[in-house]
Amino acid sequence: MAEGSGTQSPEIGFGVDIGGSGIKGAAVDYSTGEFTTDRIKIETPRPATPDAVAETVAQLLDEAGWEGPVGLTVPAVVRNQTAESAANIDPTWIGTDVDELFHRHLGRDRTITVLNDADAAGIAEVTYGDPRARSGSVIMLTFGTGIGSALLMDGHLFPNTELGHFPYANGETETWASSAVRDREELSYKEWAKRVDGVLHEFRRLFSPGTFIVGGGISRKAEKWIPHLTVDAEVVPAELRNRAGIVGAALAVRDGLRP
Ligand code: BGC
Image (cartoon, rainbow, N blue to C red; front, side, top):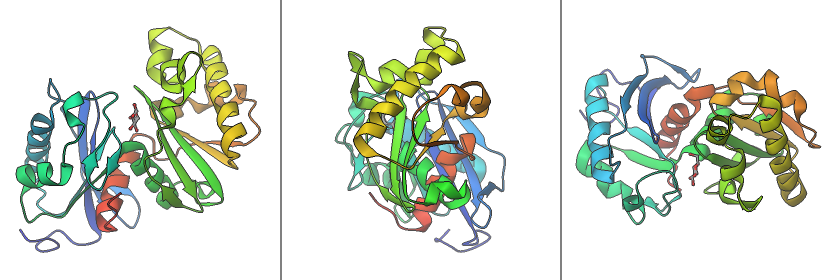
């Protein structure tokens, strides 16, 4: 079906969030940022090579019956629609022309955009989340297997910041304070919050943001750890929770964002 034709109205888009363990997709109502369909989740193939992942995305879109434009996130730097890093995904993504890859698997005529997962989450929060996300200087951090970051100024994105790889505590911030580290080292919320607080202090010293938005699955438990933070900036839990990547991807393709 051609873009924007048939039953797929421009008020509805589709986003796919590609992660290390699952590939998730849903149709998104642009007026509310809510899903209009159930979220479909398919396990990420192993090894998660670009072709295997793109084939799984094709399967997901088939299952959803979606033939229109699609936005996709990957946990990597994406510049000019080429993946340039691969921290928690298969190293063969580095140098992959993601525009060519997904057009080959999802259809040559389909409108496609690919962007970093945390950048997508940032855009989604700006559009549908807490108003503080679109006001002034904001650093959004997503805590999961790694730490993703989105730098925002009055809702405008500076793409492909990789603050999870900022050198910290003899490693990187994400090897010290991701939510996977909390699980692995069996840290209490208080212990983990102390690590996150250290990281936020460092980012506060370097970037002086007015607000930090903290996302990822752990934002659901915000009341257990945000009260332990001492950083001199507002810390706001993300509102879109695990919808953010999908919603941001759908927004990116609608708006023709191609970082
Ligand atoms: C990757 C980022 C990604 C983040 C969250 C990091 O390891 O380098 O590109 O945004 O994980 O998935």
